[in-house]
Image (tube, rainbow, N blue to C red; front, side, top):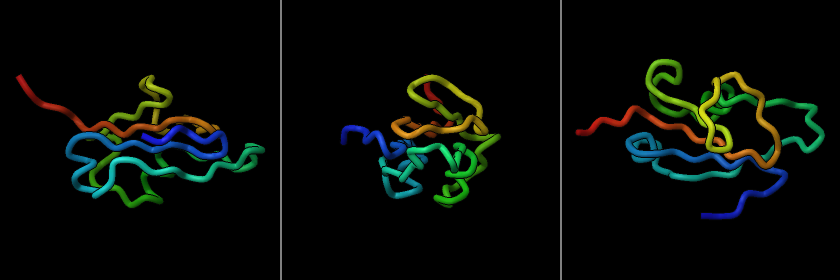
Length: 87
């Protein structure tokens, strides 16, 4: 995996979500001055990801579960995690 850039947000998709979207990782430009604050919910919409963010997908920022409306900062790692079933 690529090292995160301080001026970008690293976006990761996991499991079936990765397969549906056709990619596992992307870098998204972030405003280094914080003038434009993005949230996971906004990126979900801009990336046109499949499914329902609130009902089917968990959000993690820097490997900690977070709310979909948490502001992102340059250098953050954002992960979208669909429900995982198994036994």
